Image 1 (cartoon, rainbow, N blue to C red):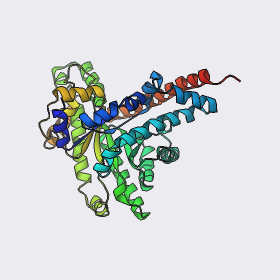
Image 2 (image 1 turned 60 degrees about the vertical axis):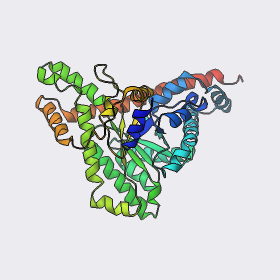
Image 3 (image 1 turned 90 degrees about the horizontal axis):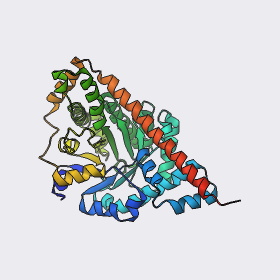
Image 4 (image 1 turned 180 degrees about the vertical axis):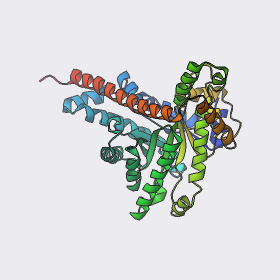
Length: 371
């Protein structure tokens, strides 16, 4: 069942699970995925926690204790989510040690309501790193305009970061620049650069969802021929940018000082259109030194029938650019699409967080001891 997953790992793609819950931790399921399915990391986001905690299983005793202490709902959520991340990090610690810190990591996101506030994002990132208190944590910061200086500041303090919600090539280059700036700050502060790691989460499937909708509205044969091509083209050109930045003189100076490359991470890799093969964003995004964070359904599909045939990214850049150019000729604005997706991504996570606040607040009230 896991031959395709092993081949993927052997090609240099780290397999991370895009999900976490207390049940997954306590049942032994996460340990089993690490042992049998080549999973070497975990990512979380506000939507994942909203689903896990609202489901309720495994959280009742902690919620009752928090209710007895009369904590605020914000504090309750932070106590619950950081507990899950801490426990998952402990399960992944052997992977972290075996890979010299590259993998075996668990990501936790700053409060999505802070996405457009640089100072608050930095403060929250520091707090989360302190609360989880595990070396194999990644603090997730969205790649908004306000997020970019926050990324540089947090990396500069020696905190490892997962940059999330990247949709555009221009923004991705700005993210890599922020990472290098952060490393330069860390170096100037005398920090050990070898202990700082980062991934840049480039979102995939949502690009096809939005662009395919626009292509369908056009309805021409030319438009139909471009369905399902934009997301892969965008991601492949992102890898081209990665190769350029991490072969520059600026990078060479940091690498000499012990710095680690910021790996490209393919996120949103669950296929949303049933017309496409369900392993599309795994099979067709194989490249060295990358991460693919998968929902469990995609992980299982890849294990069952993934077609891992080697590198499917390098050597495709000319074709990828031609496909994005063809979209522009049809009047589909790349800049408009990626900005819309970023705005929607921030809104979605904020809505999930607000839903989590409401459901948790209701549970705290229900469980509160009578006066």
